[in-house]
Each structure stands twice: as C-alpha cells, then as structure tokens.
Image (cartoon, rainbow, N blue to C red; front, side, top):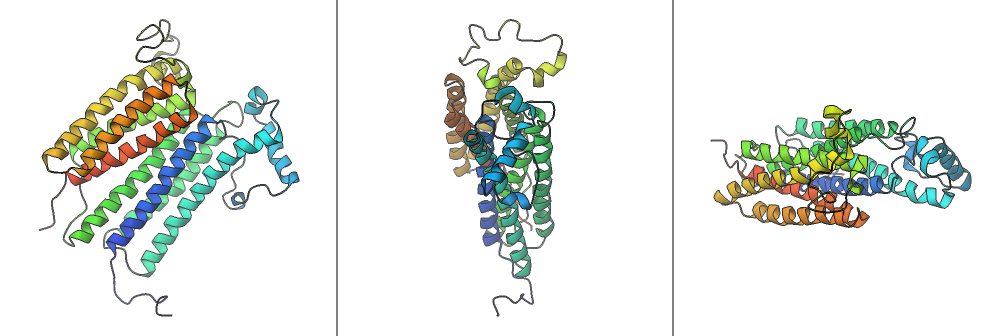
Length: 347
C-alpha cells in the first residue's frame, strides 16, 4: 500500500525520468523507420479511416478483412495501380500501416504512463512539468497531422501529399528532439542539482536548421518518388543537371513540386548539411566534448554513403530505410553536441 501512496513532499528523480524519455525517443526513432517502410511500400493509404480507439484491433475475421479491402478499393490509388491486387496482397500493405499506427498509440500510452507515474510520485523536477505536458501535446497534434496527411490521398490523389508528408516527418522529429534535449537536461540536473536547462548555441541551431531542411527535402524526394528519377551519381544521367529538368510553367514551385529539381537540391544540400555538422563537431571538440564528435563523424559518413547507395540501387528498400534512420541518429548527435556546448550553471 505504501508503494501506491503519493509522497508528502517532492522527490525529484531526474535521472530516472530522463532515461524514460530516452525510451520514448527510441520508440519515436522506430516509428520514423516504420514510416519509411510504409512510404516505400505504398502502404500508407491501406487504412482509409481514422479510429483512434477501435482501430487498435486489426480485422479479426474474413468479413472484417473484406470490409477493409472494399474501403481501399474506393480510393484512387487502388483504381490507378492495384486493380489486380488480391486480399493477401492487401494484407501485406495493411500490415505496415497498422504497425505504424499501433506504434503511434504505444508512444502516446508510454509517455502518458511515464508522466502520470512521475506526477504521482512527485518525481518531476521543478520547471519540467509544463515541458512534459508540451511534449505530450505535440504527440496528440502529430496524430492529427498524420490523419491530415493520409486524408490528402483518399479522394483525388493516388498518394499522400509530399508537403504533408514532410510536415508529418518534421513534427515527429520535433518531438524526438524535445525528448532528447529534455533527457539531456535531466541527466545534467542529476549530476549537478544547481544546473539550469541548457541554452542552444547559435552554431548548433544553424546546423540543426540546415539538417532540418535536408530532412524536409528527403521527405519531398520520398513523397514525389524523386529517388527513382536518376540512379546515377554524382551526375544525374550524363549531366550535372539534366536538360529540360526545370519546368518553366512551375516557376518557384519547381523547388518542391518537380521531382528532378527536388532530387538535385537534395543531392547538393547534403554537402551544406555535412559542412555545418562538421563545423559544429569542430566547435565541440575545441571545448573538450568528444562523445558527440565521434557520433557526428560516424553517422555523417554513414549517411552520405547510404544516400549514394540509395540512388545507385534504385531505391532499394533496406538501403533507403537505413538512410532515413541514420538521419535521425545524426540529428540526435547534433543535439547532443549542441547541448554540450552550454556548460554554464546557476551560480
């Protein structure tokens, strides 16, 4: 009974709370990877309804499977590409979207339990309660963004909007970043009760912003299937930029709507992101921070190799998904380095 009673006085446990937030961040990383599989396998539109509660259970009998398949047959994607799809084929694409949505619910449930237990045990350090609530609210908003994205492909389009796909991915990574940053703050607090939350250095914010643009471009590439446009590197076919690649009728919209232009920008903005990451690593190294420097070097090298391999393999699913996953790990390493640059404590 004493284990269930609420402590009479605050009992902050920053290290334990930080560890749990990293568990949730790991789940967010996993859902981003599954989201990549969902996109490449064209599974995202297989579930045509948003049922936050009842949708936890998959179809359990032949009648329910037939009903789900009939719903899918009503959308343009089925008519345009999958008229010969069998029920077994539908079950394959349904699986990935179901796992994606189940993970989303699981992340919300785990975070809610962590928050409630920490509140009940009065284990949340002063000043972190509202931050926890904010992260949870972002998770709820992400669910709505996910459905907003799926809805774009149910009536006229044969796929989800690549713009909405990018918003969905960036929202997920915003949650991931908030979880990682808050966990790092809590670990610092556990080491030194006088420590205040870290303030990001300008060089870190710049590097993170440039990486965010590159990740957004990656989402555009995935949403427009632009990775299939040219499977050569470093040139696009025989040219650095293919003749006729710029559509004058689109104007500036070429930058986000033209698959050829989007692939071209994604290729070369990667080097801007690499330089920014290396400059951040150099600053971190100069201040004696080695852990995140090694992480940045490792994940940056791997990410560049995976990006090239994604093109040369014609967007092999394993390589492409690994490319997306390592982007998240690179983001985590930049967050780690940026956080470490602020070592000031409350006097």
